[in-house]
Length: 369
Image (cartoon, rainbow, N blue to C red; front, side, top):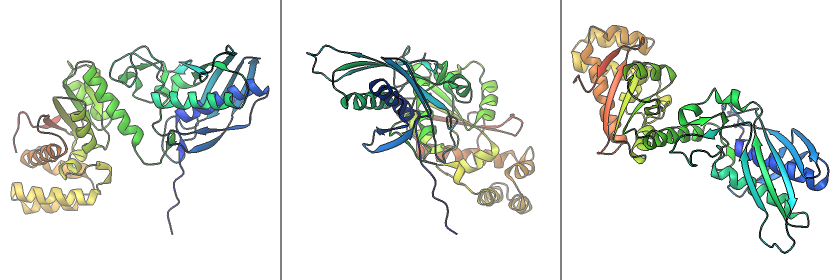
């Protein structure tokens, strides 16, 4: 049986552009449109249904669309993205394209830290979406005679609530979500949004003066890392998820001098295999590798057999700690070798492995394999 093809969706930037075009058309035509067509940053077009639309007066309208992320897991899937548009006639002698001034309203975050695509003080509406919004409004105006100047305020009714599920505060985006999109389309499992978040987090870390970043794979490992390095600012802690290789490559690109990989033992095993994306590594193959390493390092065939027969990395860890710290150190040494292959010679790399309660069982700066 063939797999179902995953459905693409559209970004918050595309949603904002569609809402802005719908509001512009409502003013110009005197009635709310049921749907609009907008041009993506790729040059392709997409038709989007209008969710709500109301004329406020003869020069102002507010419309919303519902963001559809397709089959991609996304906290903004199903969110209302809206635009309040105001139009006014410009002087007849004016022959330039209509001006479009874009601002952020309720539920759209505001940037408070350096290192992002826009400077502090700006609404978190990225350059790509701004181009789409401008293009969409100008398309609406082009179908109607007379020059106009437009003001567009993007808003997200539940933006503050949605933002709590993101890393926006860490990035210095306060008060709502970001309006994002590099192409306008969300492609399922492309991971583009997550890697963009990693890149932004590393950029903010460097721009706020951090020379070293603590790379963790999730919220739990990050909490333990923050306890281990309480003197570091929150910007220094960056969640890379499964993106082992990209996390290191982006650290180099963003000019970090040092990184610390602070991970639990299970994720450490996948990194030790040199897997660029640790989501892809099958657990039985990980335990096969650990079994071979344990035999090589300890010379204990019975231990190797127990590890090979284990159901999980957690069970295997119980065989190794505290009885065989040298095997865990061997895992740490392999992580450093893999990490070095994904980075550049100038990046100093430290590896710390946590047990499942958050205690450090290996630190490459104080232990050797």
